[in-house]
Structure formats: C-alpha cells, structure tokens
Amino acid sequence: MTRILMVCLGNICRSPLAHGILESKLPKSSFFVDSAGTAAYHAGNKPDHRSINVANKYGIAIHQQRARQFIASDFDTFDYIFAMDSSNYNNIISLAKSNADIGKVKLFLEENPNITDKNVPDPYYGGADGFEHVYELISSTSELLAERLKHKHL
Ligand code: 4NP
Image 1 (cartoon, rainbow, N blue to C red):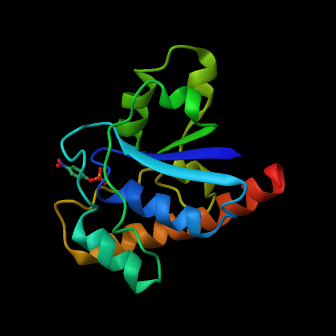
Image 2: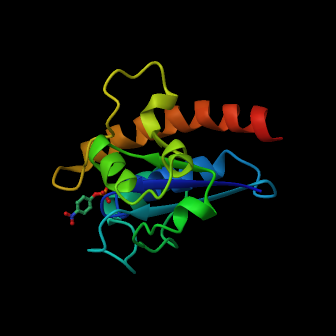
C-alpha cells in the first residue's frame, strides 16, 4: 500500500478536494489517500460547503471527510506528503525529525509543469469562483500525479 497525504492550513477547503480527487483516480487496493491541516482550528469539521459543492458538481463526494491536524507521526505513516502552498510546506517541515522526513514533503503543484505559480491559492475568504479555480488546479495536477504513482507503484 502506498500512502499519500494532502495538507493545507485548515483541512476544510483545499486538501479535502485534493484528497477526494486524487483518491478517485487511484485504485483503493494499492493506494491510501488522506488529508490534514497544519492548524487545528477546524478539527472534527466537515469540509467547507463550497468545497463540497464544487466537488459534487464533478461527481466527487467529500462530505464524509472530517478535518484533522497534521501530526509528526504522519511522517512515519505516509510515503508522500503534498503541501498546498509554501506556508503549509514550511509548517510541515518544522515538525520533521530527519532528512528522510523532509524528503517526503513536496509542493503539490510541483507535480504539474504547466503551472508556474506553485501555490494553490487559499479560497477561504473569496467566492465560489475561487473554489472552481482551485478545483481545476487540483484536478489537472492530480491527473498527472495519479499517472506517475500508478507507473511507479503498480
Ligand atoms: P484551507 O483553507 O487551508 O484550504 O482549508 C482555510 C480554511 C480555514 C482558514 C484558513 C484557510 N481559517 O483561517 O479558518
């Protein structure tokens, strides 16, 4: 089993989408996908309704997810840890215990050579169009990442 963790700040907007979208593109028999937030503000909460709605529109169900905080033991549990933006990246790295831990962490959009700004913008304070844009960034990147993961691990 290959384990992949998607991480943002609150674990209610961006990483639940990345979790649901990537999971939909990989066989469950070989890949486990999860998500977490570097902050605990929303721990136990459902994803933001705007993320639930945009995912629904494209046939992905994320309403069953519940937010949790990223913890240091996630470095042991997961093979790949993807940060949605560079602030998330720095917060994750600050909990690393070894170079092996650090080596597991990447900016998610580094997987997509067609995108120049490597930060998934935080849509929390914006409108529905921000969530649509985030969905498109995450979906196109997840397509590339899923192909790479299947090639490497299946
Ligand atoms: P996320 O978005 O990191 O994509 O889940 C946010 C959600 C909540 C907050 C910030 C960003 N907040 O400040 O509560």
